[in-house]
Amino acid sequence: MYEGYETVIGLEVHVELATKTKIFCGCSTAFGGSPNSHTCPVCTGMPGALPVLNKAVLEYAIGVGLATNCTITRYAKFDRKNYFYPDNPQNYQISQLYLPICRNGYVEIEAPGGTKQVRIHEIHMEEDAGKLIHDEWEDCSLVDYNRSGVPLIEIVSEPDMRSAEEVIAYLEKLRMLISYLGASDCKLQEGSMRADVNISVRKTGTGEFGTRTEMKNLNSFKAITHAIEGERRRQIERIEEGKEVIQETRRWDDNKEASFTMRSKEDAKDYRYFPDPDLIPICVSDEMLEEIRAKQPEFRPEKMERYRREFDIPEYDIDILTQSKHMADLFEETVALGAAPKKVSNWLMVETMRLLKEHELDPEDLRFTPKHLADLIKLIDDRKINGTVGKEVFEQIFAEDVDPVSYVEEHGLSMVADSGALSEIVAKVLAENPQSVEDYLGGKQKAIGFLVGQTMKAMQGKADPGAVNQLLQQELSKLVQ
Image (cartoon, rainbow, N blue to C red; front, side, top):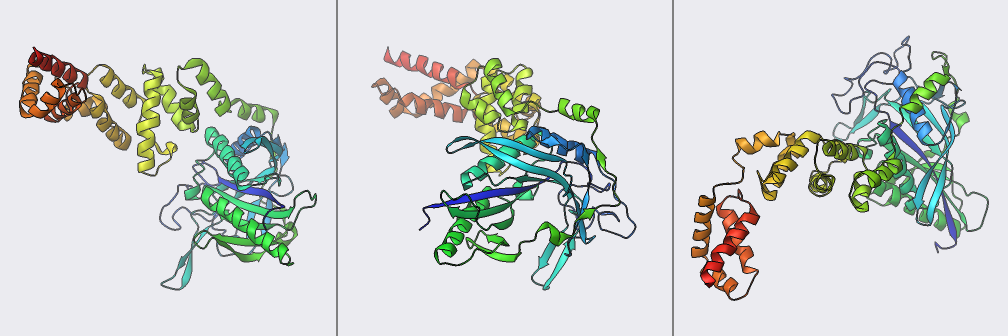
């Protein structure tokens, strides 16, 4: 039933920018905080309060536009988008309709069929709305305006995507570019990156678009994938049953794996846009544009190419390390302090990734310093601690960015250098495990592994496994003679 149809998808991606203050006032943009504690007359829409554009918002928007191959609008304006809803304190949203800051761009994605270009219609700046909190016990809704006035850019694509896989590839590409720029942390779970999905279906080979529906504020790749697949099925079923697909806004319920009507789809005329009279036009000078262009970072493709030239690490390592700019920066700065590239890569890709997954964190959440990782690697290289203790110390570095040198000293974790003490423990282990000794002498080479483990346990892990192995072999060889 679902064969013979093509899915046509376009996205509106909202990204909260990483400014410290809001788009038109000086209130904090920090996530969380007591309700309505990050507010002032401007972002709560008080009469007579006048907005003033935050320059950093403009710079971030232009930076994203350049990274996505857009034409920068040199003379741009803000407009009022009028609608009435409790989380919208002014009863209008300051946005851009007629002269958005960026237009006609594209990004390249790796789609199932190969490299594909997804066109970007425009990028515009706007303010976020507040947040409605529904209290089921009191049967009422409360409004928190902390998010009202938080700066957003909205990235509007052309309907160039044909599957959920292409949509996720596009979103991952945007997230990587924006994260590399430092323009946003793009955390879907905190709402700093949200996607509205416009989707329609048509018979394969048909040139004309079908009627589209919009799914609002999807904030996980899983939800986006399920919503696309579910809405595709729903629309095809309606067409096959001879029913009409209605242009509307729908809400996806991931628990029920179904979408529900929210409201009829509005067009621009429904919002009665008009130029905002309180904000002056934006004139982007040659000097400003070149200054922002000069600040563009080394993006992932260029970074990967440089890693191939400069560092003797496998392609797999390069692919993992460069997926996050923060992780790549940690790698480079640790290597610059004298640590071997492959050893740094191993700590980041194995232990760091394990702990990130365990604590459900992103690489951008890492707070330990390159120096402490470099110092830990040196402690192991200098045989001050062994690898097992190193992992224990690294967990503390990961959690609290402790100084590994001080931590090892304070907790008595240095490897025991007293050969007499080690010889005494080895003799005791051999005496207490005659069966393992007999097995080894009988040709079972693996038996020595158990003896090494028992010795390390007796030494509380503070011995060099290599030295323990060597000493055990020496003592066992004496028994053969």
